[in-house]
Structures are given as C-alpha cells and as structure tokens.
Length: 291
Image (cartoon, rainbow, N blue to C red; front, side, top):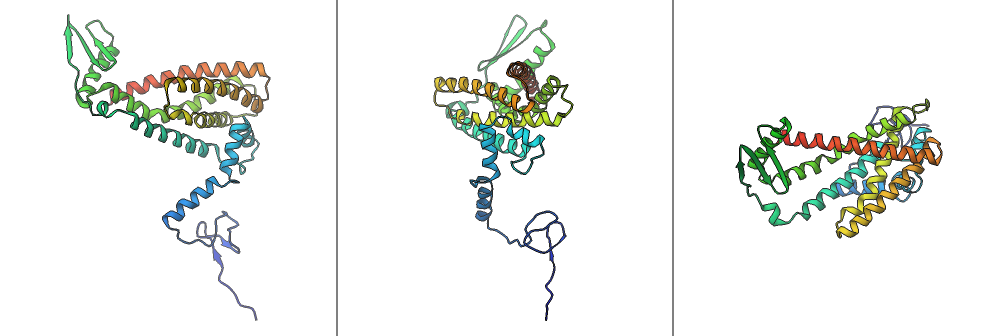
C-alpha cells in the first residue's frame, strides 16, 4: 500500500519541488527561523569559509591580474563573486574603516573648537580667513571668487570651522566620486581599444571595477597612520604596485604587448587624474553651495 505525501512548494517562487532544493530558483525548501547570532554566523561562514567564492575571488584579484575580468567575459560567472558585489563589499570596508579612523584621529580640542574668525575689511576688499583657507572678494574679483567668499561666510556662521566642515563633507562624498570614476575609466578603455568589437562598454567597466577593488584592498593597511615617513613609503610602494598590476592586467585581458600596455596605463592614469580633480572641484562647489 502506497501513501501519498504532500508536495513541497518552494516558498520563494512557488515551484513544486521534490527534494531539499528547488529546481527552479535553487533555494532550500526546508527553512527555519534563525536567531540573530545564527544569522551573523551564517553570513560570516558564507563569505569567509576557506573554500568560498570570497577567498577564491580575493586570491584571483591579488595574484592573477585580469583573471576575474577574463572569467566574467568568458561567462564563467559562478566561480567568483559578481564584480559589483565585490566592489561594494571592499569599498564599504575601506571607507568605513577610513571614516572611523579619521574621526578618532581628530583632537578633542580641535573638534570642540567653534570659534569664528574675524572678518577683516581693508580698502573695499573683504578677506575672510578660517584656518588655512582664505577667500577674498573685491569689486574686480571674479563671480566664482565672490560666490566662494559669500558661501565661506555662511559656512563660518553656521558651522564655525570652514576647514573642518569641508574636509568632513568631502570625505563622505569620496565613495560617490570613486564610483563615478569607474565609467570614466571604462570610457578611456573603450577609446583605447575601440578596434576590439568583441568587447562592449560593460566589459571595460568590469575591468575598472576589479582594478578599483584591488586598489582599495591594497590601501587598507595605509588607513592606520603610523607616521608620515612610513605612510609616504607605503604610498610610494603602492603606486609602483598598482602601476605594474594594471600593465599585467591589461596584457592578460586585452592580449596586448608590454609596450602598448605601458602606454595605455600611463594614458589612463593621466586622464583619470584630470577627471578626478575636476570631480573633486565640482564636489567642493556643491558642498559649498548647499552649506
């Protein structure tokens, strides 16, 4: 005598399942509510298990330049963490640690200081000084100069320390600036390799995402300010490493010779630097205008 069992319905997509995993979406069919710590441990185990995609992705990112991008272009998507997820995770860790260290490094006397600098008026020329920043406006000054002067006075009246206000706001907008720079870098790659009809803009964007992931992961130790000399040495070594890394990554992804890879790397570095400065200035103007 046979008995019939109730069919298993996937709670995620509603597809009839016969075993522990749904054949339609892949979710487990038997789930139970977890405690908060169980959820945390599940997350840690999922990302940091020795054989997880996370460690495989980091290993490929650090020691095999261009491998993650090549795997994505070749549609080998299940081996590694998706590029955007990897970027969000690494950049979030970097900026969270950077902000926390930055806040702790501000002296109490400086953070508590809220004294207003006097406005000095001389020969029909207004000069305001707050810390190391000076804004000057006169009858013959430019519109931008007068605008910055007026906004600096408003920032001083509302927030006290102009330098501290601008620095804190720029630090909080850095993640947006770097995310904006990814399509800019992809655009440079698209122009440099415009003859490669097999590569689309999104493929160049994936390369840019992985390069920024390597960049942020390598910068993590430099968050801790040991001394100016040590940090300067680290930044110098970092600059050499990322330059060599990009050359190797471009050779592996775009299958070009060393000479062209060096030329392309230098071109992108110059263009990236110019657009980064422009983005930083625009960010400064927006912060000043909305203060």
